[in-house]
Image (cartoon, rainbow, N blue to C red):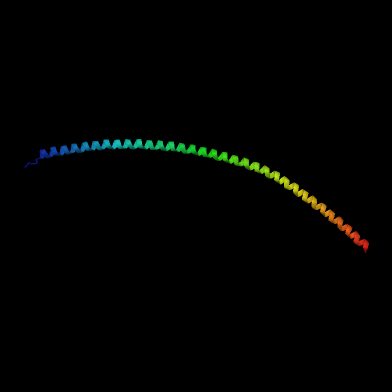
Length: 125
């Protein structure tokens, strides 16, 4: 059986310490690689979101233009329709004026007929 003396234990402890130091260095290198990977990933994600924001903004600009064009066309159609209603209103005004003239003429005629009837009845009495 091998005996463990203080020199051997010191040597073993030294090798274990060197091993942990080496493992610590490897973990540090791995940590740096992971950190640099996350930095690259963050940059790619930020670039992707920037491109997506530009696309969305340009899409909204196009949508706003289409909506404005559509509203202008609707305004033009309403203006044309408004002109047609003005013509129709003029025709109704003319028709109303003719009806009033006919009503006045009939009133005058009825009053005249009433006067004639009163005159006939008065002369027969």
